[in-house]
Amino acid sequence: MKINVMRTDLAEAVSIVSRAVSSKATIPALEGILIKAYGSKLNISGYDLEIGINTNIDASISEQGEIVVSAKYFSEIVRKLPEEVVCIETDDRMITYITSGHAEYQIVGMNSAEYPDLPAFEENEGFEIKSEILREMIRQTVYAVSDNNAKPIYTGSLFELENKVFKIVAIDGYRMAIRQEAVDSEVSSQFVVPGKTQQEVLKIIGGDDENVYISVGKRNIMFKIGEYSVVSRLIEGTFLDYNSTIPKTSKTELKVNTRLFINAVDRMSLLNGDKLQSPVRCYFSSEEIRLSCSTSIGKANDVISVPVSGDEVEIGFNNRYLLDALRNVDADEVKITLNGGLSPMIIRPVSGDSFVSLVVPMRLANV
Image (tube, rainbow, N blue to C red; front, side, top):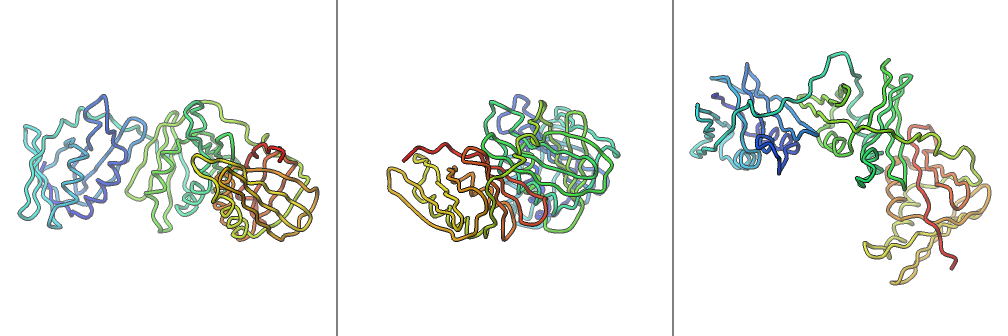
């Protein structure tokens, strides 16, 4: 293999692809990235058997070929090369020669035959969605994905496609986030995508208004984002019937300025920390929300003046869970519904139903 490639393009591609490389793999090749040079494109892949990232960049290819090189060393070398043009050449002994200006490197590579193949997908088994919509859908829900491996199914989000409506649902046992959008697709499907995969997709999606193609197989999913492909194993198992967890009635309702509520909860949070966890008490009366928090450090109180309809209720929340829900609504004003002090708080935008968030309350001590 012998190629010339632009250092900026190569450094960006290697940096992103390397996020799917395993640091400690039972298969040595998986600690490297696979480089393939054919035609006028350099194809670069990283894969840890759970998630894979693949991309193509332009290159001037004198001799075709493929090689696996250490992701750690190759990434550092490319990032620090002095000139914009990089020459990469390999020989029969799997030695890779990297040259840029007066800088020269030799690193030992591996045979590409030792690198596992990424899952393949049929062209017609997916759907398209605008990148900016997918980015917002993931961002507004992935915070509620569980980080507890005791129930692996909830370390991912449910992707549900039915009747031309695409939903993402995340649950961790303490909160739930649902985001939905209309899509032009006749596909009907349900699958669970790992939270880690969604975070990688978020990092790759750019600001331009391109389409992301999502293709789903029996055990894997692929996100096609421009020249990048993110392939991931799906999580197997039965996801909670999330519709049954949403209260159908409410005893207390109000509309409140989102930023005002966030700021008040944030002020109560100052007395909480990693070693100090006390609920933020919210007392909803007819004309105001009274907030308080008490820990061994001290006490805090605040009031938001806002009309409240229905029953008065006192309820407590983990400050971080409540703030996560409020910060991800993306609306100037939210509608809050309550059904007593032990039922989840439901947070929605005032208009529309594209986003729903539930926050499970903490039991309050009688003080």
